[in-house]
Length: 139
Image 1 (cartoon, rainbow, N blue to C red):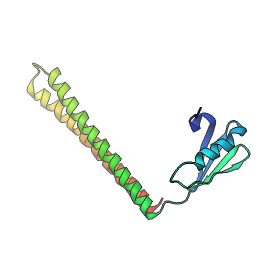
Image 2: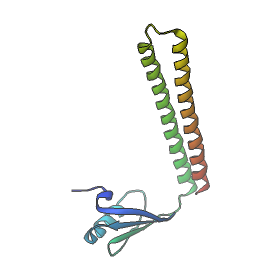
Image 3: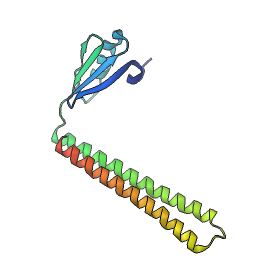
Image 4: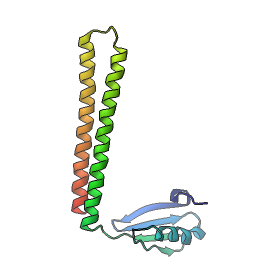
């Protein structure tokens, strides 16, 4: 039965274009190499060296980097949407829990929630921008 790679080998990044896979059982190296070679659309050609499998990974083309940057932006937007959902949930919980509490206290807690969510959204945006620049520069 197929197993996750982490269950049969240790994966390390030797360089930006080289992945080394050290199989725990040397007899598994050919099967690991075959599985990696069969991944569609990646064009990987693994080489077996004893219990190790080396995989040269080509630098992504400009088009591939653009697609990666787009995927990163979509992931960042999904994270921002999740923070907005959490804000709404927190406001709803506060509303239920604050029955009979002074309105100033409720407003203050809502402001605290909004600040936390806004800070999280800014952090997501900053990290997404950094990742986009790194992807587009090829680093």
